[in-house]
Length: 519
Image (tube, rainbow, N blue to C red):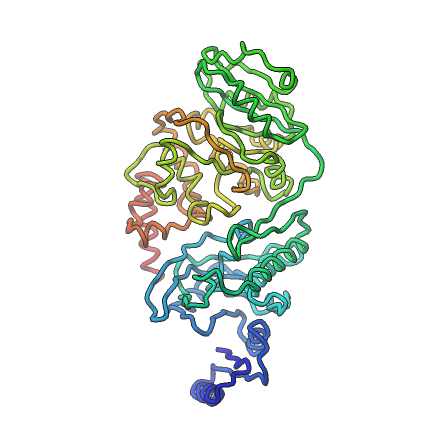
């Protein structure tokens, strides 16, 4: 334990620290002649350390009794360079106020705000290599450190998340954790830290202030104008599609875009005359009666000419004119293969969304509930105002590079013809090393009161669970402790719902035995 007295003016502090050090040789103490600030004091403490790893503890917070044991166990098993855990917020008397159930490392989420905070542990040599804490980022020095630790010289650091609450963060009247009116300088310092991280990563992006203090918006710029094709399958309805289509194109400020509408004979879309402004941009395709939705989307995607494909549910209207540029900004970054936006619901759909999507009804075995959870749960858990890596994006409002879509042979219409074809596409793209990303900077409002109901697809869900069971058991972007600790759902019931009856029972028993052996 390395303690630094940062120029305390209280006369009893230095004798007290000296007494502690005399009682236990593991305690090292250093006193500074004058106050140097938290960054320099922490750097001086780290200079006293001889351990291979550093674990950071603020002076008014607490560690759980098993915190360092859990850290050591994770190091032995996974050999990470950086570790962090879940944490709890406590009051000045130590009573629980809240829990932070974090995702595994989520680089896009970190660009928005410091979701990691505590408990932070890193290799001492890595801490030294990045220069420790920056005095110029006072108030956001921990955010700056995490940005530097997570990527140095374009090399991604090996980071491990311990899904246990090992740290208790004490909330006080002046704490930024509960009072965002405190420490304006910290908000500005965080913006500077993120701007520096953008420069190190050579990202062509602008850093803006976020909706709240200590939250930031990373807006990627787009160079050039790659061609884009919007693909939408119209419902079986005689309602005219032209009002929606004209409004969609009217609020889309992008010069190189075409629209491909898949229309059944019952919809009558092909019979509508198009105004001159749309005649060379909008194309109709027949939807065959015996064709599944993903099969139709595959066929039309091959006929479309765009370098990038947008899948858009009919009736959705983006709320910003440069929504296509926002989508492109993510996909021109080679780390991402799919980007999805935020759909704001109306009518009955809005009432359904008012229920916490991060908490599934494990008694609802419908394919619709299962698919919705896989798409929406993680970003509702981690902050809907934050762009972030996700397991899968919704095909209601998303973009995929055409070449990548063709590389994975599009949607698997044979295995997943009803509901899960979009999630499956994202997971197959993920196997190539490309993540999906959610961005709230692309928002669309639904004009339809109620979308068409999803058909029953029990066999499809079972097939999906068998194919993707490992990712379902451990979704890196969703922390199941939200269910297990806060909602009281048993691990066995959770696994039963997420991976199916047989697989759930087997995984539940395996995890229970593993936990008993570990503990």
